[in-house]
Length: 255
Image (cartoon, rainbow, N blue to C red; front, side, top):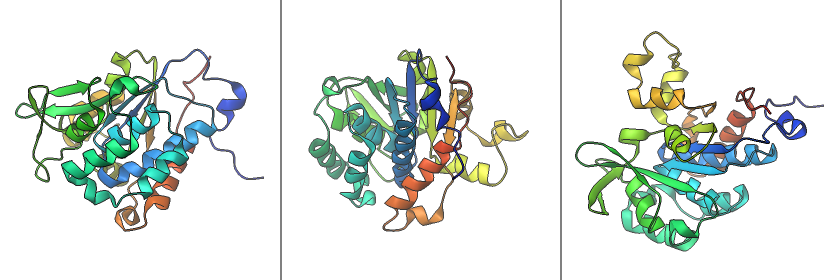
């Protein structure tokens, strides 16, 4: 018999009952495909989010989940496109219009896309209106793209102010927040042995990231496989996200 993961007993014990679960999906460029593996593992364990918030690539995956897509549907969506092409605003918005509902109001679950103002880097929580435009704003990576003009603001990638939107899930009513972290910088630091508990953490991790962790009940951190940046990496990244979720600590998710 194979080794049982930490997450598998949750379904049998029915420990998710009574919780309003929020799922926070971080930014992380192409590594955001690993979020799909996280969603796969959570679904197998019977853990279904009631609230979703996503930053940058997390907003694209999160919107699909909020629209009612299963992990296989989101995987199909990921395979439909060469991901670096989505750095272009018009291509990204066309992609969203093809796959996703038109407006936030058409989604099945409460969802927020996170962007940042230019200048000032203030967090903007987008929860209504045109979905493709909101995701485009959340994914407007500095240097690579111009800011997106939306609702009277100039907006850029949400990662500059809120790379892991756990706090937003909490603000939207979640009482248990699961955070899927695929952010390159946190993965590199953890790989070098500098975890958020390290004595140098306050100097190396952004304050907004550490604040997000303080509002997270269960953290799923996917390592940074270098092969994930190569063509044909969808399988590798989904497998990495699934493995990370299976080994995350869900001990606080109790009746």
